[in-house]
Amino acid sequence: MIWRLLRSLRVQLVLLIIIALGIAQFVSLWLFADERSLAIRAALGFEAAGRAANVARLIEEAPADLRPSIIRAANSPLVRFDLGTKPLVQHSDHSDGGLVETRVRALLNDSYSRDIRVELHQIQGAILPLPNLSHEMTEMHLAMMRGELSAIEMNLSISIAGGQWLNVSTRFERPPIQWPLYSMLTFGLTAMALLVAVSWFVMTGLLGPLRRLAGASERLGRGEDIDALPERGPQEVRELTAGFNRMQDRLTRFVADRTRVLAALGHDLRSPLTAMRVHSEMVEEDETRESLVATVEEMQSMVEATLTFAKGLSGNEPMQDVDLQSFLEALRGDMVVPFVLSDGPEVTVRLRPNAIRRALRNVIENAVRYGGSATLGWISADGEIEISVTDRGPGIPTAELERVFDPFFRLEESRSLETGGHGLGLSIARSILRAQGGEISLVNHPDGGLIATIRLPVAET
Image (cartoon, rainbow, N blue to C red; front, side, top):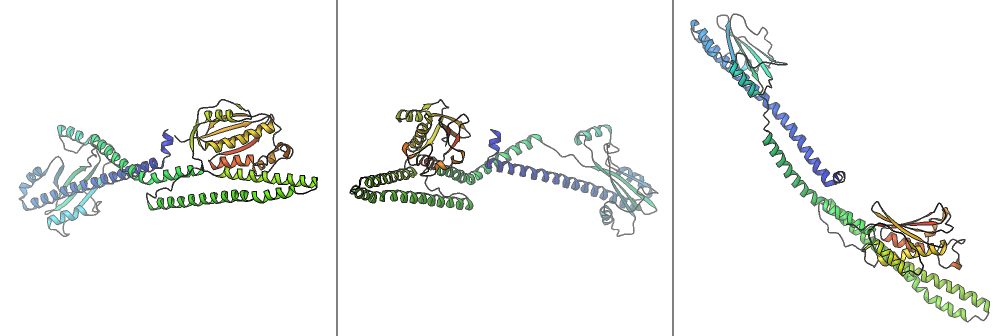
Protein backbone atom coordinates (compact mmCIF):
# COMPACT_ATOMS: atom_id res chain seq x y z
CA MET A 1 0.00 0.00 0.00
CA ILE A 2 2.79 2.45 0.94
CA TRP A 3 4.83 1.58 -2.14
CA ARG A 4 1.79 2.06 -4.34
CA LEU A 5 1.17 5.45 -2.73
CA LEU A 6 4.79 6.50 -3.25
CA ARG A 7 4.49 5.69 -6.95
CA SER A 8 1.90 8.46 -7.30
CA LEU A 9 3.29 11.54 -9.05
CA ARG A 10 1.38 13.80 -6.68
CA VAL A 11 2.96 12.22 -3.58
CA GLN A 12 6.41 12.24 -5.18
CA LEU A 13 6.21 15.94 -6.01
CA VAL A 14 4.94 16.84 -2.53
CA LEU A 15 7.74 14.83 -0.89
CA LEU A 16 10.30 16.44 -3.21
CA ILE A 17 9.11 19.92 -2.25
CA ILE A 18 9.18 19.06 1.46
CA ILE A 19 12.68 17.57 1.24
CA ALA A 20 13.98 20.55 -0.76
CA LEU A 21 12.45 22.98 1.75
CA GLY A 22 13.93 21.04 4.66
CA ILE A 23 17.42 21.09 3.13
CA ALA A 24 17.10 24.80 2.39
CA GLN A 25 16.01 25.49 5.97
CA PHE A 26 18.89 23.45 7.37
CA VAL A 27 21.46 25.27 5.23
CA SER A 28 19.92 28.63 6.14
CA LEU A 29 20.04 27.76 9.84
CA TRP A 30 23.66 26.65 9.58
CA LEU A 31 24.66 29.86 7.79
CA PHE A 32 22.67 31.92 10.27
CA ALA A 33 24.35 30.24 13.21
CA ASP A 34 27.79 30.86 11.71
CA GLU A 35 27.02 34.52 10.94
CA ARG A 36 25.54 34.90 14.41
CA SER A 37 28.71 33.55 15.95
CA LEU A 38 30.92 35.90 13.94
CA ALA A 39 28.74 38.88 14.81
CA ILE A 40 28.81 38.07 18.55
CA ARG A 41 32.56 37.56 18.57
CA ALA A 42 33.17 40.77 16.64
CA ALA A 43 30.95 42.73 19.02
CA LEU A 44 32.68 41.31 22.09
CA GLY A 45 36.14 41.90 20.62
CA PHE A 46 35.39 45.52 19.73
CA GLU A 47 33.89 46.07 23.19
CA ALA A 48 37.07 44.79 24.87
CA ALA A 49 39.22 46.91 22.51
CA GLY A 50 37.18 50.00 23.34
CA ARG A 51 37.60 49.43 27.08
CA ALA A 52 41.34 48.93 26.59
CA ALA A 53 41.65 52.19 24.65
CA ASN A 54 39.74 54.13 27.34
CA VAL A 55 41.87 52.65 30.15
CA ALA A 56 45.07 53.47 28.22
CA ARG A 57 44.00 57.10 27.75
CA LEU A 58 42.99 57.37 31.42
CA ILE A 59 46.34 55.98 32.62
CA GLU A 60 48.29 58.43 30.47
CA GLU A 61 46.26 61.40 31.72
CA ALA A 62 46.22 60.43 35.44
CA PRO A 63 49.06 60.85 37.94
CA ALA A 64 51.43 57.88 38.32
CA ASP A 65 50.27 57.08 41.85
CA LEU A 66 46.70 56.57 40.62
CA ARG A 67 47.57 54.07 37.92
CA PRO A 68 47.33 50.95 40.19
CA SER A 69 43.91 52.09 41.33
CA ILE A 70 42.78 52.59 37.75
CA ILE A 71 43.96 49.09 36.84
CA ARG A 72 42.11 47.56 39.79
CA ALA A 73 38.95 49.44 38.93
CA ALA A 74 39.12 48.41 35.26
CA ASN A 75 39.52 44.71 35.99
CA SER A 76 36.46 42.51 35.71
CA PRO A 77 35.78 38.78 35.50
CA LEU A 78 35.60 39.13 31.72
CA VAL A 79 38.56 41.42 31.02
CA ARG A 80 41.88 41.56 32.90
CA PHE A 81 44.22 44.58 32.76
CA ASP A 82 47.87 44.72 33.78
CA LEU A 83 50.49 47.49 33.60
CA GLY A 84 54.10 46.37 33.15
CA THR A 85 57.39 46.99 31.44
CA LYS A 86 57.06 44.10 28.99
CA PRO A 87 54.33 43.47 26.43
CA LEU A 88 52.22 40.34 26.79
CA VAL A 89 52.13 39.98 23.00
CA GLN A 90 55.66 39.48 21.70
CA HIS A 91 54.94 39.81 17.96
CA SER A 92 53.36 42.56 15.94
CA ASP A 93 51.76 40.57 13.10
CA HIS A 94 48.07 40.66 13.90
CA SER A 95 45.94 37.59 13.43
CA ASP A 96 42.71 39.61 13.07
CA GLY A 97 43.65 41.58 9.97
CA GLY A 98 44.30 44.79 11.98
CA LEU A 99 40.67 45.47 12.87
CA VAL A 100 41.22 45.68 16.64
CA GLU A 101 44.36 47.84 16.26
CA THR A 102 42.54 50.22 13.93
CA ARG A 103 39.71 50.60 16.43
CA VAL A 104 42.09 51.26 19.35
CA ARG A 105 44.07 53.87 17.36
CA ALA A 106 40.86 55.62 16.35
CA LEU A 107 39.74 55.84 19.98
CA LEU A 108 43.20 57.11 21.08
CA ASN A 109 43.47 59.61 18.21
CA ASP A 110 46.77 58.00 17.26
CA SER A 111 47.56 57.41 13.61
CA TYR A 112 50.68 55.25 13.94
CA SER A 113 53.15 56.47 16.57
CA ARG A 114 51.99 54.04 19.24
CA ASP A 115 52.91 50.34 19.20
CA ILE A 116 49.79 48.22 19.49
CA ARG A 117 49.96 44.43 19.36
CA VAL A 118 47.01 42.07 19.06
CA GLU A 119 46.90 38.29 19.27
CA LEU A 120 43.81 36.14 18.64
CA HIS A 121 43.67 32.35 18.81
CA GLN A 122 41.05 29.65 19.05
CA ILE A 123 41.01 27.56 22.20
CA GLN A 124 40.92 23.89 21.18
CA GLY A 125 39.70 20.86 23.14
CA ALA A 126 38.12 20.92 26.57
CA ILE A 127 38.23 24.40 28.03
CA LEU A 128 37.30 25.94 31.31
CA PRO A 129 34.88 28.82 31.76
CA LEU A 130 36.07 32.40 31.61
CA PRO A 131 39.06 32.98 33.86
CA ASN A 132 38.86 34.88 37.12
CA LEU A 133 35.26 33.87 37.78
CA SER A 134 34.05 33.02 41.23
CA HIS A 135 32.76 29.53 41.93
CA GLU A 136 29.13 30.66 41.88
CA MET A 137 29.55 32.55 38.62
CA THR A 138 31.34 29.56 37.09
CA GLU A 139 28.40 27.29 37.88
CA MET A 140 25.93 29.81 36.49
CA HIS A 141 28.07 30.27 33.38
CA LEU A 142 28.26 26.53 32.72
CA ALA A 143 24.51 26.18 33.16
CA MET A 144 23.82 29.06 30.79
CA MET A 145 26.25 27.71 28.17
CA ARG A 146 24.88 24.15 28.63
CA GLY A 147 28.40 22.83 28.96
CA GLU A 148 29.18 23.70 25.32
CA LEU A 149 32.20 26.02 25.32
CA SER A 150 33.92 27.29 22.21
CA ALA A 151 36.07 30.35 22.83
CA ILE A 152 38.50 32.79 21.24
CA GLU A 153 41.17 34.36 23.46
CA MET A 154 42.38 37.88 22.70
CA ASN A 155 45.57 39.39 24.14
CA LEU A 156 46.23 43.06 23.56
CA SER A 157 49.39 45.08 24.39
CA ILE A 158 49.26 48.89 24.10
CA SER A 159 52.35 51.03 24.48
CA ILE A 160 51.96 53.65 27.23
CA ALA A 161 53.99 56.85 27.55
CA GLY A 162 56.96 56.34 29.86
CA GLY A 163 57.99 52.95 28.42
CA GLN A 164 55.23 50.89 30.01
CA TRP A 165 52.75 48.49 28.40
CA LEU A 166 49.07 48.05 29.11
CA ASN A 167 48.36 44.34 28.72
CA VAL A 168 44.75 43.24 28.25
CA SER A 169 43.50 39.65 28.30
CA THR A 170 39.97 38.56 27.55
CA ARG A 171 38.09 35.56 26.24
CA PHE A 172 34.78 35.70 24.41
CA GLU A 173 32.86 32.54 23.92
CA ARG A 174 30.27 31.58 21.33
CA PRO A 175 26.94 31.02 23.04
CA PRO A 176 25.32 27.72 22.06
CA ILE A 177 22.44 27.80 19.64
CA GLN A 178 19.18 27.75 21.52
CA TRP A 179 16.81 25.01 20.34
CA PRO A 180 13.31 25.60 21.71
CA LEU A 181 12.00 22.13 20.92
CA TYR A 182 8.30 22.85 21.31
CA SER A 183 8.42 26.03 19.23
CA MET A 184 10.45 24.38 16.51
CA LEU A 185 8.18 21.34 16.45
CA THR A 186 4.98 23.38 16.18
CA PHE A 187 6.54 25.65 13.55
CA GLY A 188 7.74 22.66 11.51
CA LEU A 189 4.40 20.86 11.68
CA THR A 190 2.46 23.99 10.78
CA ALA A 191 4.74 24.82 7.88
CA MET A 192 4.59 21.23 6.63
CA ALA A 193 0.79 21.12 6.88
CA LEU A 194 0.45 24.37 4.93
CA LEU A 195 2.99 23.22 2.37
CA VAL A 196 1.29 19.86 1.86
CA ALA A 197 -2.14 21.50 1.57
CA VAL A 198 -0.98 24.06 -1.00
CA SER A 199 1.07 21.50 -2.94
CA TRP A 200 -1.78 19.00 -2.91
CA PHE A 201 -4.18 21.62 -4.25
CA VAL A 202 -1.74 22.62 -7.01
CA MET A 203 -1.00 19.00 -7.90
CA THR A 204 -4.71 18.24 -8.07
CA GLY A 205 -5.17 20.92 -10.69
CA LEU A 206 -2.28 19.47 -12.67
CA LEU A 207 -2.82 15.74 -12.26
CA GLY A 208 -6.64 15.71 -12.39
CA PRO A 209 -6.73 16.24 -16.17
CA LEU A 210 -3.93 13.70 -16.63
CA ARG A 211 -5.87 11.10 -14.63
CA ARG A 212 -9.00 11.74 -16.70
CA LEU A 213 -6.91 11.43 -19.85
CA ALA A 214 -5.48 8.09 -18.71
CA GLY A 215 -8.95 6.76 -17.92
CA ALA A 216 -10.30 7.92 -21.26
CA SER A 217 -7.41 6.25 -23.07
CA GLU A 218 -8.15 2.97 -21.30
CA ARG A 219 -11.84 3.16 -22.15
CA LEU A 220 -11.08 4.06 -25.76
CA GLY A 221 -8.82 1.01 -25.99
CA ARG A 222 -11.72 -1.13 -24.78
CA GLY A 223 -13.93 0.18 -27.56
CA GLU A 224 -16.18 2.34 -25.40
CA ASP A 225 -17.84 5.45 -26.76
CA ILE A 226 -16.53 8.43 -24.79
CA ASP A 227 -17.22 12.14 -25.06
CA ALA A 228 -14.53 14.70 -25.80
CA LEU A 229 -12.54 15.54 -22.67
CA PRO A 230 -12.70 19.10 -21.30
CA GLU A 231 -9.47 21.01 -21.87
CA ARG A 232 -8.37 22.04 -18.37
CA GLY A 233 -5.15 22.56 -16.46
CA PRO A 234 -1.83 24.06 -17.61
CA GLN A 235 -1.24 24.88 -21.26
CA GLU A 236 0.77 21.72 -21.90
CA VAL A 237 -1.97 19.53 -20.42
CA ARG A 238 -4.59 21.40 -22.47
CA GLU A 239 -2.62 20.73 -25.65
CA LEU A 240 -2.29 17.05 -24.73
CA THR A 241 -6.04 16.77 -24.09
CA ALA A 242 -6.84 18.52 -27.37
CA GLY A 243 -4.51 16.12 -29.21
CA PHE A 244 -6.23 13.13 -27.59
CA ASN A 245 -9.67 14.43 -28.59
CA ARG A 246 -8.53 14.84 -32.18
CA MET A 247 -7.01 11.36 -32.22
CA GLN A 248 -10.18 9.82 -30.81
CA ASP A 249 -12.33 11.56 -33.42
CA ARG A 250 -10.08 10.44 -36.27
CA LEU A 251 -9.92 6.84 -35.08
CA THR A 252 -13.68 6.67 -34.65
CA ARG A 253 -14.29 8.05 -38.13
CA PHE A 254 -11.66 5.75 -39.66
CA VAL A 255 -13.15 2.59 -38.14
CA ALA A 256 -16.68 3.67 -39.00
CA ASP A 257 -15.74 4.41 -42.63
CA ARG A 258 -13.99 1.05 -43.03
CA THR A 259 -16.96 -0.79 -41.55
CA ARG A 260 -19.45 1.05 -43.78
CA VAL A 261 -17.37 0.28 -46.88
CA LEU A 262 -17.21 -3.41 -45.99
CA ALA A 263 -20.94 -3.59 -45.24
CA ALA A 264 -21.85 -1.67 -48.40
CA LEU A 265 -19.68 -3.96 -50.50
CA GLY A 266 -21.34 -7.07 -49.13
CA HIS A 267 -24.79 -5.53 -49.53
CA ASP A 268 -24.24 -4.37 -53.11
CA LEU A 269 -23.02 -7.80 -54.18
CA ARG A 270 -26.40 -9.34 -53.39
CA SER A 271 -28.15 -7.92 -56.45
CA PRO A 272 -25.71 -9.19 -59.13
CA LEU A 273 -25.49 -12.57 -57.36
CA THR A 274 -29.29 -12.86 -57.42
CA ALA A 275 -29.27 -12.07 -61.11
CA MET A 276 -26.59 -14.67 -61.73
CA ARG A 277 -28.65 -17.21 -59.85
CA VAL A 278 -31.67 -16.51 -62.08
CA HIS A 279 -29.59 -16.77 -65.24
CA SER A 280 -27.92 -19.98 -64.05
CA GLU A 281 -31.32 -21.60 -63.60
CA MET A 282 -32.00 -21.01 -67.29
CA VAL A 283 -29.08 -23.09 -68.43
CA GLU A 284 -30.41 -26.22 -70.13
CA GLU A 285 -27.45 -28.50 -69.54
CA ASP A 286 -27.92 -30.09 -66.12
CA GLU A 287 -24.28 -30.48 -65.18
CA THR A 288 -23.40 -26.90 -66.11
CA ARG A 289 -26.52 -25.53 -64.41
CA GLU A 290 -25.79 -27.38 -61.16
CA SER A 291 -22.19 -26.21 -61.19
CA LEU A 292 -23.18 -22.57 -61.71
CA VAL A 293 -25.87 -22.71 -59.07
CA ALA A 294 -23.44 -24.20 -56.54
CA THR A 295 -20.89 -21.52 -57.31
CA VAL A 296 -23.42 -18.71 -56.95
CA GLU A 297 -24.74 -20.15 -53.68
CA GLU A 298 -21.23 -20.32 -52.29
CA MET A 299 -20.62 -16.71 -53.30
CA GLN A 300 -23.90 -15.66 -51.68
CA SER A 301 -22.92 -17.50 -48.53
CA MET A 302 -19.58 -15.69 -48.49
CA VAL A 303 -21.33 -12.33 -48.96
CA GLU A 304 -23.62 -13.09 -46.00
CA ALA A 305 -20.57 -14.03 -43.97
CA THR A 306 -18.92 -10.74 -44.97
CA LEU A 307 -21.97 -8.78 -43.81
CA THR A 308 -21.93 -10.72 -40.56
CA PHE A 309 -18.24 -9.88 -40.14
CA ALA A 310 -18.96 -6.18 -40.76
CA LYS A 311 -21.70 -6.21 -38.15
CA GLY A 312 -19.24 -7.73 -35.71
CA LEU A 313 -16.91 -4.74 -36.20
CA SER A 314 -19.60 -2.17 -35.43
CA GLY A 315 -19.67 -0.96 -31.83
CA ASN A 316 -23.15 0.43 -31.41
CA GLU A 317 -23.95 -1.74 -28.37
CA PRO A 318 -23.28 0.03 -25.04
CA MET A 319 -20.78 -1.36 -22.55
CA GLN A 320 -22.13 -3.00 -19.40
CA ASP A 321 -20.75 -4.39 -16.13
CA VAL A 322 -21.82 -8.04 -15.88
CA ASP A 323 -21.14 -10.89 -13.51
CA LEU A 324 -19.02 -13.33 -15.51
CA GLN A 325 -20.36 -16.55 -14.01
CA SER A 326 -24.00 -15.59 -14.55
CA PHE A 327 -23.16 -14.44 -18.08
CA LEU A 328 -21.51 -17.76 -18.97
CA GLU A 329 -24.28 -19.83 -17.42
CA ALA A 330 -26.84 -17.90 -19.49
CA LEU A 331 -24.72 -18.51 -22.60
CA ARG A 332 -24.62 -22.26 -21.90
CA GLY A 333 -28.41 -22.31 -21.56
CA ASP A 334 -28.91 -20.47 -24.87
CA MET A 335 -26.53 -22.50 -27.00
CA VAL A 336 -27.61 -25.59 -28.89
CA VAL A 337 -24.07 -26.97 -28.79
CA PRO A 338 -23.35 -28.21 -25.24
CA PHE A 339 -20.14 -27.44 -23.39
CA VAL A 340 -18.75 -28.04 -19.90
CA LEU A 341 -18.55 -24.96 -17.63
CA SER A 342 -15.97 -25.17 -14.83
CA ASP A 343 -16.09 -23.11 -11.64
CA GLY A 344 -14.17 -19.86 -11.37
CA PRO A 345 -13.82 -16.78 -9.14
CA GLU A 346 -16.59 -14.24 -8.75
CA VAL A 347 -15.64 -11.27 -10.91
CA THR A 348 -17.30 -8.44 -12.80
CA VAL A 349 -16.25 -7.61 -16.34
CA ARG A 350 -17.12 -4.65 -18.53
CA LEU A 351 -18.19 -5.67 -22.04
CA ARG A 352 -20.79 -5.54 -24.77
CA PRO A 353 -22.86 -8.62 -23.88
CA ASN A 354 -24.27 -9.48 -27.30
CA ALA A 355 -20.95 -9.04 -29.09
CA ILE A 356 -18.98 -11.08 -26.53
CA ARG A 357 -21.68 -13.76 -26.54
CA ARG A 358 -21.23 -14.01 -30.29
CA ALA A 359 -17.43 -14.22 -30.01
CA LEU A 360 -17.61 -16.95 -27.36
CA ARG A 361 -20.21 -18.85 -29.35
CA ASN A 362 -17.90 -18.91 -32.38
CA VAL A 363 -14.98 -20.22 -30.33
CA ILE A 364 -17.06 -22.84 -28.52
CA GLU A 365 -18.72 -24.06 -31.72
CA ASN A 366 -15.31 -24.42 -33.38
CA ALA A 367 -14.07 -26.44 -30.39
CA VAL A 368 -17.08 -28.77 -30.47
CA ARG A 369 -17.12 -29.10 -34.26
CA TYR A 370 -13.40 -29.84 -34.72
CA GLY A 371 -12.39 -31.07 -31.26
CA GLY A 372 -15.44 -33.11 -30.29
CA SER A 373 -16.07 -31.25 -27.00
CA ALA A 374 -15.48 -27.96 -25.23
CA THR A 375 -14.61 -27.18 -21.61
CA LEU A 376 -14.79 -23.56 -20.50
CA GLY A 377 -13.16 -22.13 -17.37
CA TRP A 378 -11.79 -18.80 -16.17
CA ILE A 379 -9.27 -17.28 -13.78
CA SER A 380 -8.39 -13.75 -12.68
CA ALA A 381 -4.81 -12.57 -13.26
CA ASP A 382 -3.12 -9.13 -13.34
CA GLY A 383 -6.29 -7.11 -13.71
CA GLU A 384 -7.62 -9.32 -16.50
CA ILE A 385 -9.92 -12.29 -16.84
CA GLU A 386 -8.60 -15.29 -18.76
CA ILE A 387 -11.33 -17.51 -20.20
CA SER A 388 -10.03 -20.81 -21.58
CA VAL A 389 -11.90 -23.02 -24.06
CA THR A 390 -10.29 -26.46 -24.29
CA ASP A 391 -11.05 -29.25 -26.72
CA ARG A 392 -9.61 -32.74 -27.28
CA GLY A 393 -9.26 -32.64 -31.04
CA PRO A 394 -6.19 -33.04 -33.26
CA GLY A 395 -5.01 -29.48 -32.62
CA ILE A 396 -3.51 -27.11 -35.17
CA PRO A 397 0.01 -27.08 -36.65
CA THR A 398 2.15 -24.56 -34.79
CA ALA A 399 2.86 -22.56 -37.94
CA GLU A 400 -0.89 -22.08 -38.49
CA LEU A 401 -1.89 -21.01 -34.96
CA GLU A 402 -1.90 -17.34 -35.93
CA ARG A 403 -3.05 -17.67 -39.54
CA VAL A 404 -6.39 -19.21 -38.56
CA PHE A 405 -7.46 -15.73 -37.41
CA ASP A 406 -7.16 -14.36 -40.96
CA PRO A 407 -10.53 -13.83 -42.71
CA PHE A 408 -11.59 -16.73 -44.99
CA PHE A 409 -8.57 -18.83 -44.02
CA ARG A 410 -9.37 -22.54 -43.56
CA LEU A 411 -7.29 -25.58 -42.72
CA GLU A 412 -8.21 -28.11 -45.37
CA GLU A 413 -7.26 -31.17 -43.33
CA SER A 414 -9.35 -30.41 -40.28
CA ARG A 415 -11.80 -27.72 -41.44
CA SER A 416 -12.90 -28.66 -44.93
CA LEU A 417 -15.84 -27.20 -46.81
CA GLU A 418 -17.94 -30.24 -45.97
CA THR A 419 -17.82 -29.33 -42.29
CA GLY A 420 -19.27 -25.89 -42.99
CA GLY A 421 -17.99 -22.41 -42.42
CA HIS A 422 -16.00 -19.90 -44.45
CA GLY A 423 -13.09 -19.22 -42.09
CA LEU A 424 -14.60 -16.11 -40.49
CA GLY A 425 -15.56 -17.43 -37.04
CA LEU A 426 -12.22 -16.80 -35.32
CA SER A 427 -11.67 -13.58 -37.28
CA ILE A 428 -14.98 -12.21 -36.01
CA ALA A 429 -14.19 -13.37 -32.46
CA ARG A 430 -10.79 -11.64 -32.45
CA SER A 431 -12.21 -8.44 -33.97
CA ILE A 432 -14.95 -8.28 -31.32
CA LEU A 433 -12.54 -8.94 -28.47
CA ARG A 434 -9.91 -6.45 -29.62
CA ALA A 435 -12.56 -3.78 -30.11
CA GLN A 436 -13.33 -4.12 -26.37
CA GLY A 437 -9.75 -4.15 -25.11
CA GLY A 438 -9.53 -7.95 -25.07
CA GLU A 439 -7.50 -10.57 -26.94
CA ILE A 440 -7.59 -14.21 -28.00
CA SER A 441 -4.75 -16.64 -28.60
CA LEU A 442 -4.44 -20.34 -29.42
CA VAL A 443 -2.01 -22.94 -28.12
CA ASN A 444 -1.87 -26.71 -28.52
CA HIS A 445 -2.50 -28.74 -25.38
CA PRO A 446 0.49 -30.92 -24.37
CA ASP A 447 -1.81 -33.97 -24.10
CA GLY A 448 -3.62 -33.22 -27.34
CA GLY A 449 -6.29 -30.76 -28.33
CA LEU A 450 -6.38 -27.00 -28.49
CA ILE A 451 -6.69 -24.27 -25.86
CA ALA A 452 -8.23 -20.93 -26.84
CA THR A 453 -7.42 -18.27 -24.23
CA ILE A 454 -9.64 -15.19 -24.18
CA ARG A 455 -8.55 -12.17 -22.14
CA LEU A 456 -10.97 -9.48 -21.01
CA PRO A 457 -10.35 -6.46 -18.73
CA VAL A 458 -11.88 -6.46 -15.27
CA ALA A 459 -14.47 -3.73 -14.62
CA GLU A 460 -13.03 -0.72 -12.78
CA THR A 461 -14.20 -0.35 -9.20
